[in-house]
Image 1 (tube, rainbow, N blue to C red):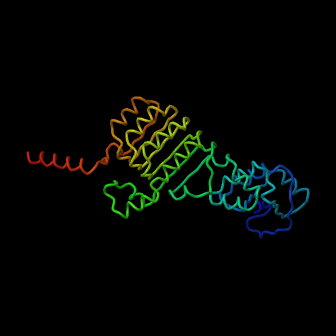
Image 2: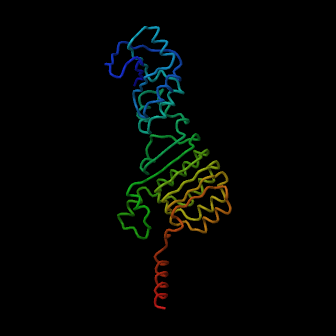
Image 3: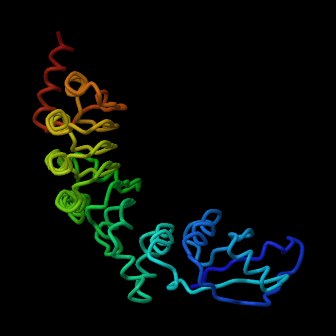
Length: 296
């Protein structure tokens, strides 16, 4: 992999000529930050039309009209490599780390993993990321059609749906419990479509991550007023709380949070207005009572 720089003296309509390649020994951090400023993430070759002053001096010294500078990625210092890795997704980081020991050390640097985003429970089981005290922001958002299966009441699922849910029922919860022990400095957590996450899991997270400032839960059907009570007891640092489309949240629980935690920005879109889960026996009792009222 190379970091390349296109000479600024090229006009857009002219043909590019590669006449010269040279290696430079001046500090690389200024160069790399300049290169990455206008390039897209995940690119293996980085280009710039206006090199930093050090390269312009080198160009004038060589008296070249058209030139291309290149250097091997392993010649960059640790700071530059961390910055470069931050532009890559988890799989790209893992693949790049397999090329040499130096890049593997960068991959294992906790500073690289301050932000983690996952788009399905299956991604949580991969080995292309690291959990550590440097993790500040975590997001697990599942928007697949399969989320509807997990959000169905357990007593309404058929055998196929139950078998599907068992495959990953504890995946997110076990992962979050691992976060509790390894990532005490977590600042924000976003969960969307995680239908198997329970109140106990969020309670443990609030206890073990005292610096948590933002908790956003969307379409997490097992979350109930017990989570809201845990927020009032253990969410001293919490400033933002979203419980959107969590159908087992009640208006009474929301009012309790507003009363005890006035500094928390609370949002509960549709939660208190949705029909909560209830066991079949309770639903039968409600139906019988409604029929009696109709007959009267």
